[in-house]
Image (cartoon, rainbow, N blue to C red):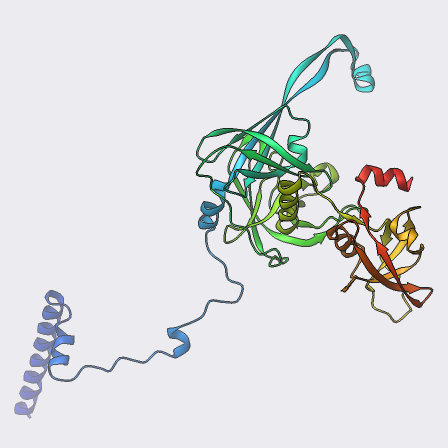
Length: 397
């Protein structure tokens, strides 16, 4: 019995001594155990990871953590614009009574005098020949236009041409080594895409704000062929004419308009799509102005009764007014006609029809199809040149 107990005690002491020795060896020579197992062929086979775990694709809709690369690509092409104009002003004498001040403000006193007014804006370099796109309202009636480049150079700009309807203007500067922005595919933008607005808001040059595309194809005036991008990226005074770019730093629009807090709105800004801006640029560079086709009619959405069983938004456009002597009147188109097709294209809605007619050259003869009192009709219209918007308003009145 004593002999067996002694043997067990000896074995226990031997095991404890071995464990202590292994601990010391592992402490001073880490990895020696793996090398010994490999030497005697006792190494464990590596555990195979599932294929899905080895190469897991990125989640659908995932995006980058930073947009610094997109900004680095686009920002050098965005410039600051300083438009100087002389305006007439007169000194104003304020009333002493606060009530009269609130009611009447003040009374002009003394002779009129000239003073310099400076308008801040932004622009985008779109050609290595020195062409810069900006907003027309930034440079309207300016006597002198200065452009501050990304690298600190200052260039004097000349006005090539402007288009009031889209609020776009083309400037030209004489400078070398110009960073030209990359232009995105005009039809690739979707609601929900991330966009960055780059510009000179309130004189804070090269400011970048981020948001998403809230909607595309926005039309704020029924008499214009507008096609705005709506975004919640912050657009402030001075951002006008700046770049709206996608997550790759490609130009998708020219920032132009915001609806401010005075209208109880926040996060509602608008940009001109790059496709429309490129069309205006090409025409102004080629001829100095923009020419659009015109049918000579006003349109509205097709009314659909709630119990008609038809879709809530029927395609086409209903004619609401025909200008006397205009192309539509000469072709026999009447108010209340529903236009469904122009040329080879279906008409989706009034804004779509405006865009189609504006894209056609004056003098183009095109077939228009529709319904009159539920009966199909076809006619040919020879488009005229679209008059200015204020002329349209006068005709309508």
